[in-house]
Structures are given as structure tokens and as C-alpha cells.
Length: 338
Image 1 (cartoon, rainbow, N blue to C red):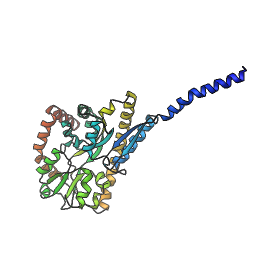
Image 2 (cartoon, rainbow, N blue to C red):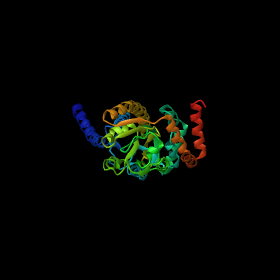
Image 3 (tube, rainbow, N blue to C red):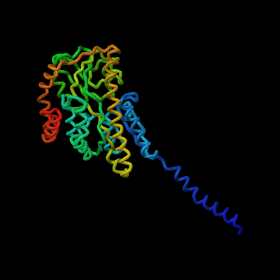
Image 4 (cartoon, rainbow, N blue to C red):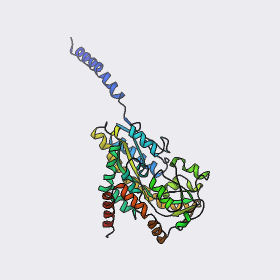
């Protein structure tokens, strides 16, 4: 046998052996991650999910791909949470307020007037207290990665400007499906109605409810200015979002895959907060330009509301545990130099 023929046969054999392997390599599909969220694609939430997806694909070398599904197409927060717990969906981002029925410690973030500014919120949420609350989710079938910013919540309605506590009287107000929100606004005099966010625009449009409360960004991106006349700057609650993973699914991932998601989540947190805060300033001006009548609550009226909600805060303290409550209040007092 000539050397040329031997070389040809060897090459042919190698081709036969490697062809199926090459085919197998081509058949290996990236790990697909369904990531649900409530707002639309053009919102600050939508932009942050897109950024997260890009980070995951880049950091995994294309081995992990995020399929972002917005506008509550996978259901409202509560429905998506249950899908994550059951392992039917991989990831989501949503309000911490809708998690209170699953993990009572999440009610800490619903405390009215808890934070004075975003700097305080960042320090507590990203520090040991925020992590301690997030870790409680694992026993319930969820893994929390990071907190995103929804922002300070403000009031809109169609009846009158909210300039004092008595102005809440007779206003049918949509609130999240959360007992702290229900109790707080009923204490302030409103007729508080729990309703999923996905049903809110329609409820406002048909006057099923008179008003709602959300950060500027959400009021703008959800076009509530089309169906609401008055915007009252109350800053009554700082509202975080939380990026969640199904624990059933998380436990199937390798340590490297988990790291890809965690690193991408942390990068998205910085992107999302910066983006949200930049947009919030522009959003208020834009809402005014679109015809909303805007008023600010005076410090004296804020103090009156805070005093009226003392009993609500006491209930939150008992519910989340006095150790956690006192640790949070102590950390805030230290930051404020008290």
C-alpha cells in the first residue's frame, strides 16, 4: 500500500468518526431561560431585562439565552411566582410587595416612609439586611438574586389633588394585592381595592377605580396620564423590585451557570438603578407636559400621614420580627447620624 493511499484511508476514517461528533455539537442547544416581567418593553423594567439578557448570553459564550416576556404575558406577579415555585418558569422580576404572602419578612419594604432617599434604600437593600430578607425565599422555592429600583411611589387620581390626608376620603384607590397597602390606605381614608397591575389601566379607563399609586416611570410608561388628571407627589413608600429564579431550576444549574446569572443580575442592578433615576427626573416633566396637574405634599402633611400610620408600622414590626425591624431602624438611625 502506497503512502498516499494510507493517508487517504486515514483521512476518510477520521472523517467518518468525527462526522457524527460534529453533528452532535451542532445539535447542542443553548439553555433557554424564560424571564417574565409586568411592564412593557419600552419601560425601565423592559430595558433592564434586555440588558440582563445580553449579559447572560455574553458571559456564557452563547450557552445560555434569555427569552424576555413582558407586559404580563406570562401572568401577573403572583401567578409568575407560583410558576417559578413549581418549576414551570425559570425567572421573573416583580414587586417585593406581592411576595409578602410567601415570605412575611418582605413586608419590611412596604413600611410607609421607611427611607428618606435612594441612598438609604441602596445601603439597606444591598447590605446584610436586604440579603437576610432575600435568603428567606429559598425555603419557599424561590432564589432572590438582586433588588432593582421601582422608585418612590406617588398618587394619581381623577377626583382631586391630594394635598392633605382628608383628600383621600371617597377615593377608590387601586393598590397591590398586599395587606400592608390595603391597611395603610384605608387608615388614610381611601377606599383601597386590591387589583393586579395588568388590569389597572382598564380599571382606570372605565372608572372602576379613581386612582392608583406608582413611581413616575411606571405612570409614564404605562400611559396612566391618558386616564388620570391629578398627580400628587407623596413619596409615601420606596418600592423595590426583585429578580427571582425558580429554586427547582436553579438547583439543576452548575456553579458556573449560577455565577453567570448572578454576575449578570448584579450588573443589571447598577444599569437599572442608574437608568430608572435618570428617567424619573425626565418622567415628571413629561407627565406635566402631557397635561397632568402636579402638586407636592407638604412636610407637615407627610408627618401627619406618618403619625396616622404608626399602628401599621407597629404591625409590620411584629409581622417581620422585632429583631429584623430593630436592626433596620438601627442601621437607618446610624446613617442619619442619630
